[in-house]
Image (tube, rainbow, N blue to C red):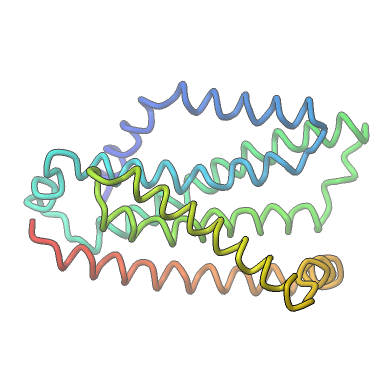
Amino acid sequence: MKGLFIKDFSYIKESKLLFLFLVLFGFGSSYFYKKSTFVLGYFSVFPGIILMSTISYDSINHGFTSLFTLPIKKEDYLKQKYSLGILLGLLFLFFAICISSIGYYRIQQSFHFLNSDFLQGCLLTLMFSYFVIAIITPVGVYFEAQRSQLAMIIVFGGIFLFVALIYFLTKFIGFDLETIIDSLIENHLSMVTLATVIFTFICNIISYHISLKLLNKKEY
């Protein structure tokens, strides 16, 4: 598994200019628009995107065929991908916390924002990153490199359409979902955070088994 990490980090290292651009853009958006929380959501999608790109890279020119002729089990391959997703989520969260902290301090001139609510908000952001990874990993395994762009459109377009559909349906039937969510976050943030962590954990377990089934169905 160590070799798989070295391979992926070597690939990610080649994208260091992209990393720098993403960090600078996030810092600029947080600084000029004075919305310190923007960067948390902004960085939350990138772990999934980068993870998808590593899967696509592995499958280029029948790469899976060569990869699985080595003493590498498909289970170990997937475990490494989910572990990489965890590391990427923590890395981008670190960048997001640093940048948002600078933005908050510039506005408030103090570090009073570093409280339990802020930290739980960061944890919720991290869980969203892992939720995206749970969706994107089996999609990346199924579509591979040849249709990776289509896979990205399906994943993020599907998430957007699902959220938009729920929003308009609740508005149509007169159910104020937005107010309920705001109330839950404001009054029961710890409960919401715990429930989100458990839900994300279950999603990733299901995602792993789906990805493994998809890999086992393919002939390499």
